[in-house]
Length: 233
Image (tube, rainbow, N blue to C red; front, side, top):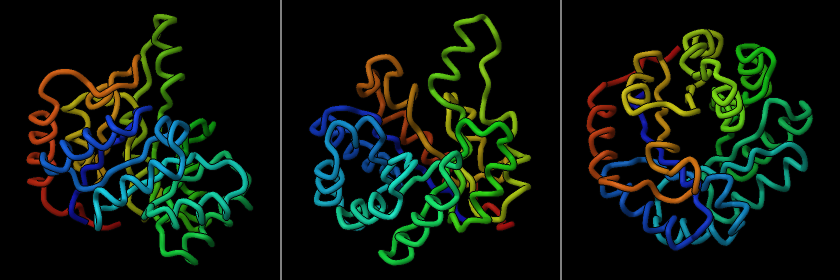
């Protein structure tokens, strides 16, 4: 699989999200993510606005679905999302409902293992239940809370190779990665590179990061796309 670069629009203002998305596309970003903060702030309207502004571009709706799986996936599909996110900690029936909605409406399902006691087992269960992708995710609060106690902040790279080895579907690593770490994830066998906080979004204000964001994203895209094919498992 050719590596994909996705920007996480974890913003709370739609105008800012559209502007950042346009900047990202100019830089070579492949997929746009309507991040959870944007969905909370703008709902279906935000996804519809992204679809209208960027026809033909894959849009991930980061719903973090825990219940009501079919309806949530259906609504986002009808609004223009091409991918929806369900949590591994949801009941298996919820995951099955999201997968069914994905099949019915032609959207792909990304299963997120955030918070699983066994991250590798959580990833495998998501695949077994029919998810098309696995998001290996160390959460925002978890990272910051552990760091505040003076302990080493966990990284998705810690178990990324084990997660990739456990599943056959493509894997994405999420959670506080540096620029160099994000670029390295295809070498771990994870072809979906997501750029969010702190690279594209300020981790405290949930606003677009300052500085030459377009230049940074262009550098990331050039290096990730130059990696070549990530062999299928």
